[in-house]
Image: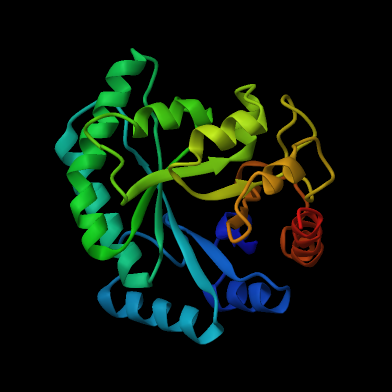
Length: 265
C-alpha cells in the first residue's frame, strides 16, 4: 500500500512546508487541492507550474491527484463543463499528477439525466485525458454517494469502460450511503483509481478525527484494496474549525495505515 494525504488538511500552507511534512513522516504522495488561496489553483502561470512540478520531483513526493471541484453531472450546459475538465487536465499534466479528482454534483433531478450529463462530458474529455496520461476519477460524493452510484455512471455506453475515466472511493460517503465495504469494493473494482480515508465520530458528527479514533471501517477498506493500491487521508479541516491541527497527526496516521496494511499480508 502506498500512502498519500490531501493538502485540504493544511489550508493555504506553502508547498515546501507540505512536502517537508510528507517526507519527514513517511508519506509518498499528495492530493493537491485545486482552489483559490492554495499553492495549486487554476490560474497558475506556466512558470509557476514548472516550479511546482520541480519542487515535487526534488522532494520525491508523487502528485497523486489534482483534487478539483468540477461537477461533471451538474445541471446546465455541457460545453462549459468540458472546457473546465480539459483545463484542469492540462494543469494536472503540467504538475505531473496521475489523476484528476472531480465531483458528480448531479442535483436533485432524475438520476438517469444526471448520469447521462456526466457520461457525455466525461466522454468528451476522455481523449484529452488519455493523451495527457491523466485519469479522471469521479469521487463517491453528493448525488452519487455510493460505489454503486458511481459504477452505474461509469458503466454507461458513452464511456464504454474508457481507461482514462475511473472512480475515487471516499470511504466516508459510501458509509453515509449505508453501503457495506464489500459491496463498494466489488462495484468499483473495474474502475478504481485509489481510495480516500478519514475518520469521524458518527454520521451526525463529521468533525475529522485522527485515523482509528472514530467509527469508519478503515481496516475493512484497506483489506479490500489491491496490495499496491494508493490510500489517501483527507482531513477536512477548512469546514471544521474545532478540528485538531492536521500536521501533528501525520506521523501517527502513517503508522496506523501501515499497520492496517500489514494485517492484510
